[in-house]
Image 1 (cartoon, one colour):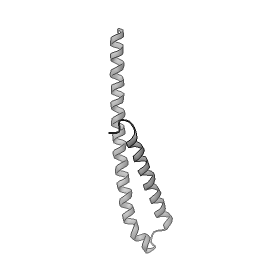
Image 2 (cartoon, one colour):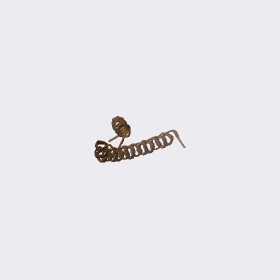
Image 3 (spheres, helix red, strand yellow):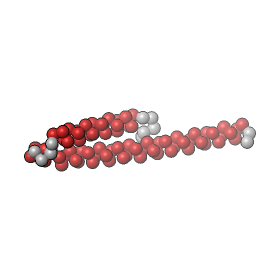
Image 4 (cartoon, helix red, strand yellow):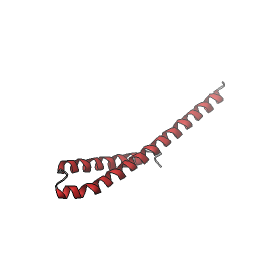
Length: 84
C-alpha cells in the first residue's frame, strides 16, 4: 500500500469511528430522555401517595434527586460535540 492509500484508509477508518461515535451518542441521548420522561411520570404518580402519607418523604426526595441527576446528565450529553 502506498502513502496515498494509507492516508485514504486512515481517513476512512476515522470517518467510520466518528460515525459510530455519533450514533452511540444519539442513542444515549434518546435513552436518557426516555428515562427522564419515566421519572417525571413517576413523580406525578407519587405526589398523591406522598400527600396521603402512603409514601415516605425520603423516597420522594430520592426520586427528586434522580430526576435532577438525569436532567444534568442529559444536559451534559447534549453539550457534547456531535450530539445533534
